[in-house]
Image (cartoon, rainbow, N blue to C red; front, side, top):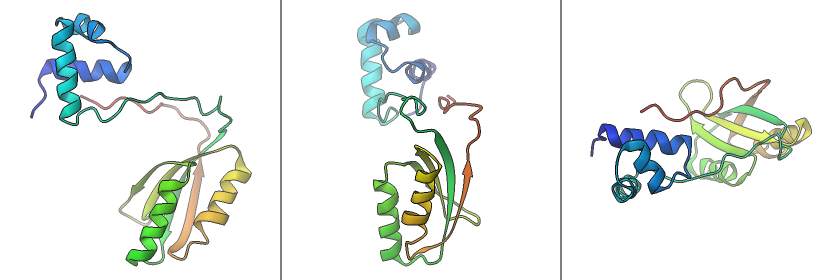
Length: 152
């Protein structure tokens, strides 16, 4: 189903503040609270809204190192790839991961407490895996733009 302008405004409002009540949404969208609530429920049911999450402060949690880690595979044998992806899925330091075109097969976004923790992740977890050929990391010096809402 295609989004109408009111649905797009509702989604934009929720990306700014997921705590908005049906009353708040109704006021912003010139709808009754029940209409706003039904639209929200429909967008959830149709998969436009996947989840609601709190954005935590990495700094306040002591995660002072953010890095992007590129992983180039030595082999794409299904069993080894499965064990590698299982590692990525279960490591709490890895907050997101993508398969990529180009030289790197995977791009990982990681948060670590410090450089020794990043070093341990790379040298004790990723590089020893038999499917991994090469790992290259880039440490974030400053994040100029926080993860932004999706364009609607």
